Image 1 (cartoon, rainbow, N blue to C red):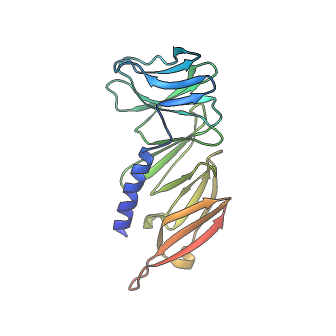
Image 2: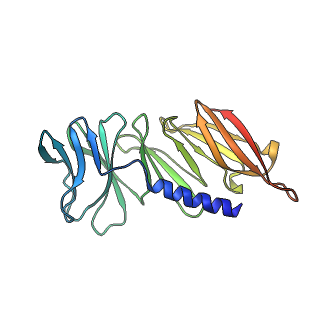
Image 3: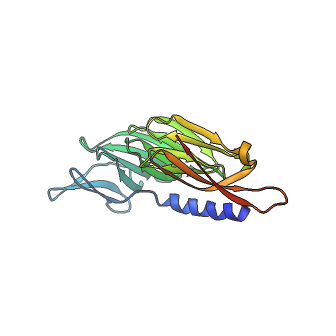
Length: 229
């Protein structure tokens, strides 16, 4: 089981490093991109042949990535001030081309706009620990949770915590990415005893999970369950 979890942790770390971000984005006004010399990196808009500087960050500010909201109204910018190890998130209003809010969540992680234009930040919090933070489009925090593993389903507008470790007590939890509310909590310990989960699928309001059941003195067995939320 330890080997499986180690492989799983490496896979998750790699997949979340490559979130849905870019350094060049098409929007309703033209092309947004990260440009400028190393000492003066900024976000620019190329519109009708003209190049417009839409940010005014301080010298040597690092711009890591930019991400357009689902409806194309906002641009999320992840950047770091010179000599700082703390990431900053800023939201640019596409209509006014002005930054309307900024926060410093700290370390990096995977960034996503949800279907309702909330912002999902997923990051590690230590050994066998992952956290997610959910913000609205003005970077007001809606909720934040930590568990041994989360799986986000942007199209389904939910995020699910999986019991990959025994301290999770076999509990699955599902939160709404629209409201941040806990939609469902369920476990199968009365039926199977101790188990962990390393695979699930979520589609059309139905969650299918694969449970690895360990019984003392017996080979591990794999069972599947399904539940609605």
